[in-house]
Length: 319
Image (cartoon, rainbow, N blue to C red; front, side, top):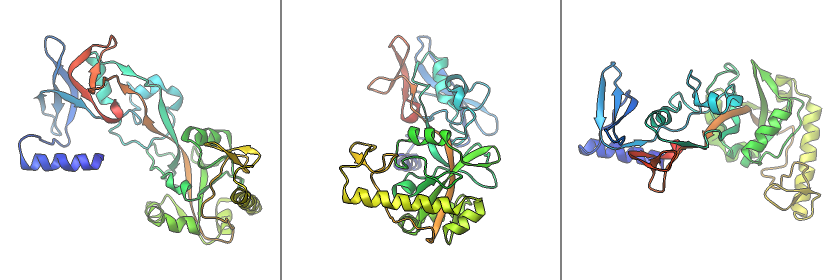
């Protein structure tokens, strides 16, 4: 929907004077009138020219998942996460939130920052602060997560916070100063999501192997453990298929499972060490800020006492 809105805005700007798009321009502060209402913003162009735009302001600057500066909202509200890499670009530094607070706008739930378990590690830049996100569809089509010993350690289809937590409890491969885990797709899963595999391989953040013996040799992972893991996984999948309602473990999302981790959907099996695989190394990354500007049902910015900051609105992750 965001791309569609951007296209429409570009169309309006091209065909009328109703909207103008200013590229390489930074809004630095909000302007207010004598009553404290927002009436515009001050901006700086790429050549250093300072100018003003007047009228109502909509803050749609996203979250602060890449805010690692001296006045970092991330460091203030979630210092425990500030060391993590992020999927956010360098535009996600909370500038709109900071400008809003400067004119009295209130914030809510800034401590609620979502960590995604599958940021892709580039082997040549393992400690890069910004990482591409591995689509959850990679696990949805049957991708398995393995630790450095070739063992599963979680329900791959669990919630993001759950999978992240299980990674932090287990031992992954260490590249640079970053620990990661192997996300492995067999040939059936790779075929179902071929575009993604091709895209990730082209960026150097996924490798293909003719079999898991080649993978095991490349990363020094015990092949016997992988083989045992796969055979156990296949047995669990078969039991779940034959008797989905009477497994001994509570299943994620409700029901019963034969998997100790609570998985009940087994796609694109069976797993076989002799099959071809696509493998990526993934690590937890800062992904999304759940909190933001306090607003009412009309998207108007609110002060701490509930009063409206007139002329100021918010949309998207910034809200």
